[in-house]
Image 1: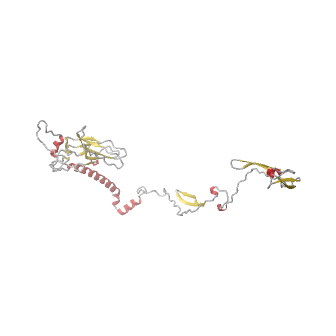
Image 2 (image 1 turned 90 degrees about the vertical axis):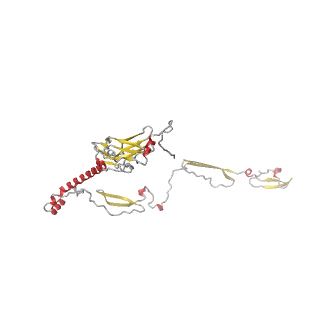
Image 3 (image 1 turned 90 degrees about the horizontal axis):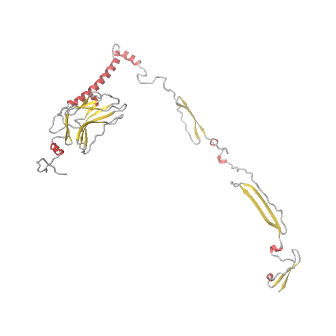
Length: 375
């Protein structure tokens, strides 16, 4: 914040003032807006085709003035084929260094089924003020006064107040009169068309004539469908409840309406199961396999005959099934030497002494006399 002042004579260039400082002279005397008594106060009116006219007038915005000393003709862009649009006639104050100018132009809105006006720019250097909004209907080739909504005199674009304290509303009434005339024309047309249809009924016997007209009404007259051309089928009102293994079995449609339905119960067979019908009583049967076997038998062994060797060979496949099996068994006879006994008449060596006695064996076969001989 700072204190500014003016105006003083300059001495050697020490007092220089720019355009904004000069314009601030009117702050407090003239508020931003359009002068109501200068020209036609920039009111927007229709022209032939898609043209509009911005009338003469003067405005004061952002410490700058704008003067339009003659009718300014602007052209609205072509209408959309199927969508509506709202364009805005604006007065733009552009203080950017590259521009430093004011202009009156059209800001085109975005087409849509429910259109809204374009957003106006409000920045430190660029400010746009609406003079009017123009409704551009889908496919129209002419703009009428009823399509134009003047915004001058509203909060967005007020009339100048202050030293100017008179307002002429004739230009505003021009738009209101045009809109009213358009509305009244439509009402009159609708009334005359309706009255023409009942005028004859009001002559003579009004009640009888009206009854005859009512009886003469067709389905098309009241927007109803002709009898016999719509579906009269009534469907079933029976409910269907499913539980446990119950499933929907069939649905019968007649003329697009459910007329019948049924259900069924799933079984194990429906699921591809081929075993016992009662899964709780299922008996497992192991699959058979043609493998191989063998047997070994030495018979009853007696005396000194014993088993000396058993040889068993088993072959299996990758699943563990026996594909080949065989075996052999051999026997032999034990000898005294096998169990550490002395042969007949054999004298034990010193290592065979027992408590200082030699051990000798007399006899043959498996019997004999053991003699103890002192050393």
